[in-house]
Length: 157
Image (cartoon, rainbow, N blue to C red):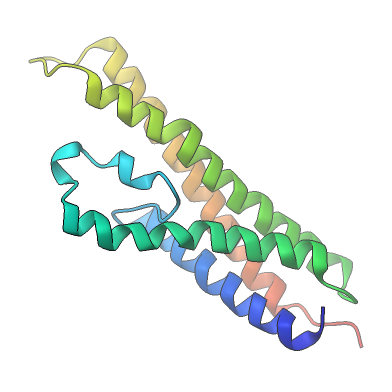
């Protein structure tokens, strides 16, 4: 791929991975497909859901550009390629943790009937959700840091 296409892809990757990492650490949504199912059903308004559904593209775009850069970059230093691959792996981990762990846990927690005192099962699920969220936040921030480092690394001349 030529340098101008690579530069555009790097800008898109850096922007989207930064938005994703920020949403995991500080936002109300993970900005990856399935995150809207993490919200309690009473917070899913139709208009609100319609606007938020556009944000589902941020995670996959970040992952797609990271994979494209890791596979398609030509004439880059090995360290830059490793950083691009680490970015792709981190973003894939965020997507996988959201779809395969946090969303199913939220669905199970929401399906439980309300009780006066939390059950052992609900406390266990809440702990597992917190751990999974910490892992995906760490992966997202790590992917963003790798994307920044890759963008700062110099090309071969």
